[in-house]
Length: 145
Image (tube, helix red, strand yellow):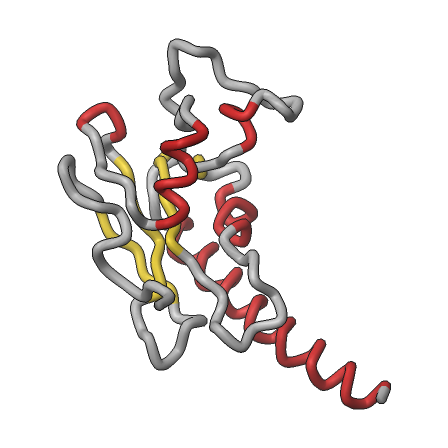
């Protein structure tokens, strides 16, 4: 049982470590303060369903996870004022849409980049691209069925 457990733990950790390394490399070349939206999903068979926060960790000290749901919720220490913020969305609904890949990018969001899974056969492969106003942020890349 222990060997089986450690085997699964090793596999999960290996995949997450690769994705975090790739995310750090992707944001490493961006200008300081760049806004990021991420549409990153766990594989259907994954034992770790909530992996979108690995982008948040890659952004620490470098960029801003624009879709972070915590500030607009008002339930955490970091909050956003009703008037909005250039660093994070002020709407919980928008944050949920961004995370689901269903958000229509607005002029006020620009400039913003998207980190997404660009290879459906290898969901650990991440890519980055610039989003334009009017575009749906999850239109490109892997989407769970």
